[in-house]
Length: 339
Image (cartoon, rainbow, N blue to C red; front, side):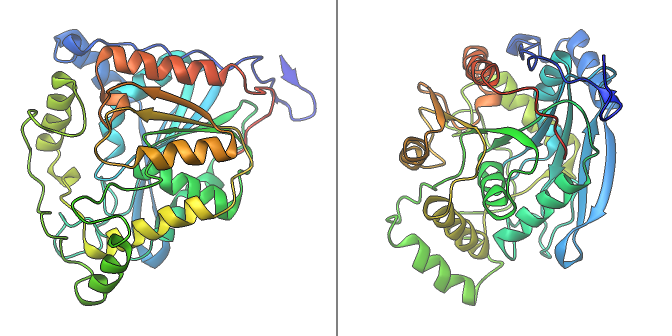
């Protein structure tokens, strides 16, 4: 069917359900490796220039008969390539996908002499980069939703606060960085300390941070799924340009300020779903819950899960997608999406 007003295909009545395509034990099978490679081979790569002249990398996974579009916003240290399994899940469901390598990550340019330092001059640079991609998305007749993880959640939320929702139908936040666990430094002390130190050592590692290291699975604070953790580390071994180490004082100060702006600023005007990792040791779960309750966001907690829900165990990924699907089915999917 075609909408005569736009001469574009009419939008679907409901957004498609997302079903995990792989189990963790399959990840290194020959057939699965080929399936993932085939999916990645369909990706179209784009490059542009962001603020301060930074070279940015975006990717697009087109679909021959899309029923929806997903804007995937990765977290800190993450290249979009790291989400290949999730790209396969979304694409198999009927979505086309756009994603970004944030400045200083993935195939986008670094802004420090040491490419391993996690640095950004201003947190709003991330937001301006994302808004640039959103504005460049072509007009389509089917809905667009955003799916963001961790730092990507903070970037998306601040972008929505500053630029509005446009024609995004809704936004999903997995383990969003609305607050940061700063222990052993008290939460009240971290912002002024980072503000002070960035004046002296803006591009230097915060104590305890270092260049990229392929840390062992045991004791990691990202996932309880060994095969998915191993897949991520092997990907970064084969693509050393993706490797990124710890955070700088400037990044920490900018990120803490962004979290305060998220908490104290206006609520973006679109439906939102927050999915929390119950055992998260990276971001502040109390802030996620408080913000969700204050603004009436849909909220779901995956009990005991570590930070990376989309790279968690099969059960945790299934619970995450169940929460996403339940929320998606309540959206007004007849709203056409424009990037």
